[in-house]
Amino acid sequence: MDEYAHHALIFRAFCDEGRLKIIDLIKAGETCSCVLLDNLTITQPTLSHHMKVLVESGLVEARREGKYTMYKLSKGGIENAKAVLDEILKDSQEGRAPSCSVCAE
Image (spheres, rainbow, N blue to C red):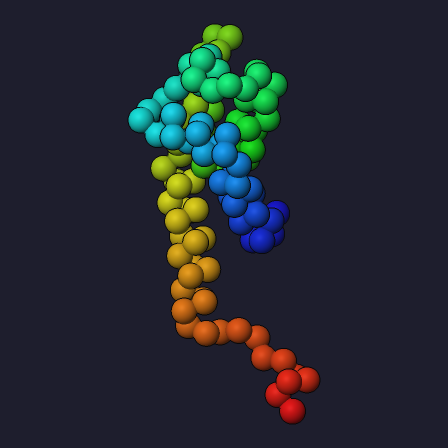
């Protein structure tokens, strides 16, 4: 997976109100999927979809405990997301836009 594809996964994870609510619920610590369902107005398949996106982005870690899945924020994934955003902001502040051969004439 190239750099842009990985960055897109991270931003996709943040671009949904439901996933932001899930992040808010699990930021205090490891949380069971049944607790998430009890606190959200979504179905189990919708929760599964959101969790798949969050796990694929690297922001969330999942582990099985019996028939339940436990979720928690990934410190490494969160740090990576911060680094990606910092890099984007750094590049924009440094004014390193590509030059145009047509306009430069």
